[in-house]
Image 1 (cartoon, rainbow, N blue to C red):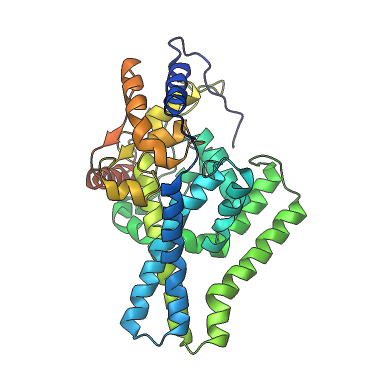
Image 2: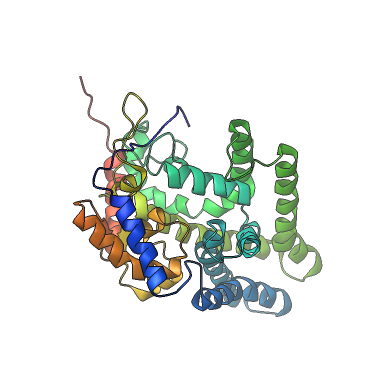
Length: 365
């Protein structure tokens, strides 16, 4: 973060206190846990099966090239599914009421080429706390090649970003595997950022290096050394798997914050945001396709971003139910509840936003 930042504490209408009371009342009245349930457990089995079953079939069966290609596509879908449904809930402490279960399933990010410490800092700390605030929320950072916010520096090539961005989105998890995790570990340890207890630098670096070696051994080295598969097929398949997963994850996350309708405010001269944290989430976050059962199931409730950002400790399996409470309470307090009725409309809004951000800013006096 560039400078200390704080949120306003002024909420004379007591929006969040009212909303929190109502949501807690829902769980108490229905005698249900805020954690995941049997539906999430079944989904976990399905997602891991989509990810791992094709891997074993590729290694043990002499499949034709077209079938191998399909297997890698399915693995990419499963990879994204684990990330959105299992790893995400677990690293928010929402998968289970038992911390050790959350810790184990949160560690599934290691087989997705990521790192628990880095992900929790970037997502739980920086993104969830400073949502859509330029210079604080790293989800708005894309190097110089993409411009998501009007507060970011404009480059001449940005005027084409609504065309080329889709090709870059697929590189998300591939970058995790190769470079991003090392850069983040160095940066976060230097800034002493953590979600919970700050790890010892030696332990974090050791964990990062060992898990990367294991990861590449499983997905590249073992198939190359012990199975009769052409090396180029292994490398291309590895890339396709990552590209599919990265494309899915990038698009889902972008549709929630980098769209028309989601604000990107800055603090005032004292470093204070205009709104309280909870109200800030309503202005900077957007739901999409919440009536689509497939989207609700596959994206792990990430299309219910408003509910997720205000209640990240609640499992996504409950978002559809509590969304009515959130929507009605926001309306009651005359606050926004941003939502695109369909995923298609959200996609259009995202690329329209990219096009607008790609235009050369008008000089001001």
